[in-house]
Length: 375
Image 1 (tube, rainbow, N blue to C red):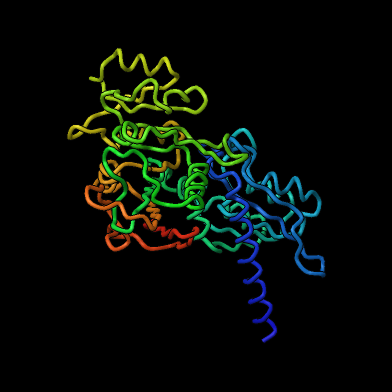
Image 2 (cartoon, rainbow, N blue to C red):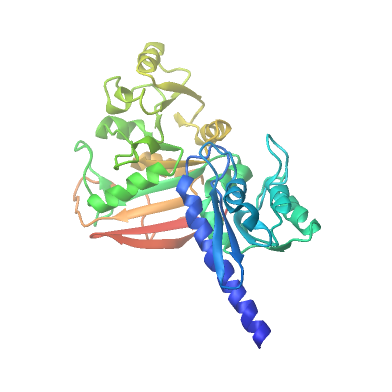
């Protein structure tokens, strides 16, 4: 009985500290380039209960890795401690030795891991280095929660494209807007701030040219202290119709603006947009629209791991029809749009096959629901 109780306590501690490591990993979400934002905690128990002696999160730009940061903070106290890592420690040599070897050199006694790394240079090899050194390894603790937090990295590794998050705001009558009326505030201020937080955690925001012309959005992060987290803005604009005096173009030198235009687009229009600081993305055309799978492959090749699709109805429908959406975020407001509104391509009662509800919240009077499909 005592052994069982001790084992149960250890499992509870493992889940507790891994949950904390996952929360820590979110600190640099969207800022670690092609690497995932990983969290690491070094926890030591000298007889008075476990204490965190080292914390680390993948640094901005992707280096140093979380394990290196946490071990440096822990110093000599890492010897005999437990390391909690949200992703299997790397096993390959780059500009620095692998993190698995660093954990061995530091003398940790135990490593608890969450998500597995699909990278063939790492998968299983990091844990093997640890076990070969006599370190106890526990795998898969809160693996699903860790994978959810680094879905962009995992999807990019497995599918060679970024994670696609579709965000929609729905009125009571299932509409997302009304032609000719520009942006309609369907949700309140609290929910809109949540959208800005979502932007801050992705590499790019994508909209169609119809939304760009109708709403003239800026698509930046406008929260105190987070303006530097504004992602790249991408407009699906085959014919380069975006006005050079639009908010997007006028801010192109401050926040990256990419125009997905086809080769047949007017050269003068493209040149005018490039003079604002916008960059052209050469795209292929399929069925008179931007070929989305090829576009996403190109974005992944440029280092992007997650994109947020914000509008409009046609763009959302195209991503859904192509089976390219990985996460669906629905905000439901109390506004009634009425006759002539743009019907949402999906709602809570019409989800594509394979999607499961994973998160619900209330933001003021608005409701939020989030669905994902298995990676």
